[in-house]
Length: 177
Image 1 (spheres, rainbow, N blue to C red):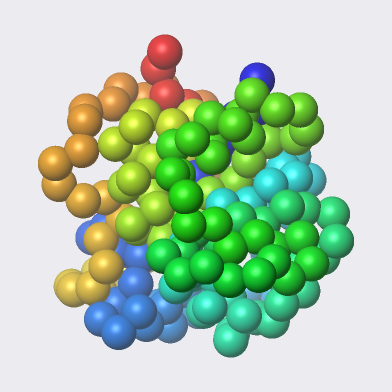
Image 2 (cartoon, rainbow, N blue to C red):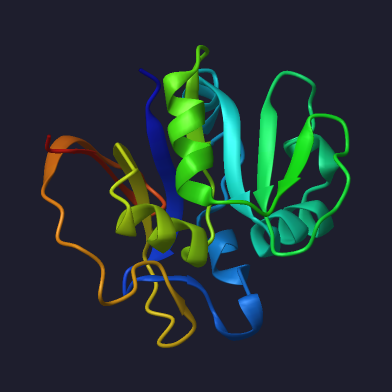
């Protein structure tokens, strides 16, 4: 069975974005030649799930080639029907059913790239198998929290912790079965 992994960055105080979906604090740890294991991780996946706000930010800040590079299926979870663009599918159906269908299929693993609404919907249905959380050394004080209150408790098992000279700490957990 395929694994669904959340790979995301957060501030030390648990925010994935400042007010107005400002992600500028991510630049604090940008370093030439350092991708924090991202290339190695993406070599293990062939499917990406993300929310429309995250998708729009990536298109605006990085460009369409970040997702639409021809070798991955991308599911943008949205409330509005839109036609597919290449291998990018705008999905407005039941998220849990989509993930269960993807997990039972063949292929490499599945990557959840955020945002918070998608992450918390997946947590409610206990569908995230692994968590790679990169903690940026900053307290932003306000914004969009990674984890919302009111979700079920889930026990995790530590796989690894990596630290970097930029101050970033990366925690890799898997869900206890």
